Length: 426
Figure (cartoon, rainbow, N blue to C red):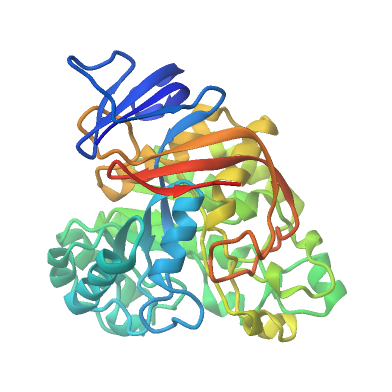
């Protein structure tokens, strides 16, 4: 198939492209951007006048729930939700059932992705055996199986000595450690930011220090071991300031922020709605403003969804007893582009945080429209107005605080390996 996309506003930060041009796809690959290839004869022509073409988005934090929690979601449902939002590469975290603890689980996910998936799925392996925090996982075997990093996700590590040993092992295998900075003793089973809202609602709060204390101890061990660490889902401005200082001093570190942390604060939690229960918690308004200001920081290399689909019952208990997390794949791009409208960052900078920068972090061939690269891309019409409803969501999880929010701009077409895998016919 030869596919020609005409008159699109192409934004490809990896190649410094930000212009109206034509794009050509041949044999699953990008053939050219701009000038028509020699002896070109298109099989399909798409007029994208008035629309943008972006490289396929790369989301580094996606719970697919399969294997083990298919009552919440499946690889088929969540990868389709991903492509409906322009995401062509997702990273599966190790807290599946069973835990991604060995090459067998990695192979299982790859097999199921090949059978039912709609986009590329990459895997992060367990940092400690069964994520129990006491024994090291078989990182060498996991790397051989193709994982893009290791993490203990939200599970605590027994102590700093164990964390140091995992760092040394990960460093010896040239693996990135994806670290969630939460001091669980300080978090103390809290469910909301420690502040006025927690007091008003009578809920146990999680202080800012639960994040900054974990960042501080991890930085000390990075200096000791030299391991490459990516700090996941930062929620406080102070934590980013600490990481900026360490980065300036030469620490091999990076970080990301989930989009909901840039729009919601603890003051938005109303009526004990479990859809606002996330971990780390929604912080106060000063942190929301601070995180927005820090998007331009070199330490931030990714905006992510932190996608966690749940069945309906998981959000119906009293707030503290609900399962944390938001179904967020389908709002990743709309919220990110709202930051452009809010003049928080430029369009090029936002698209870079969604495409080639996270691809660089993972060391995968994705996130650009370079000739010869796999034709993973989406077409985005900025004029389409739509409302997020349970009926319009493709994810099995409908748990989101953004339900009934109206967005302007929508993905109309998504290509993976040059194949049209999603088309908005509405």
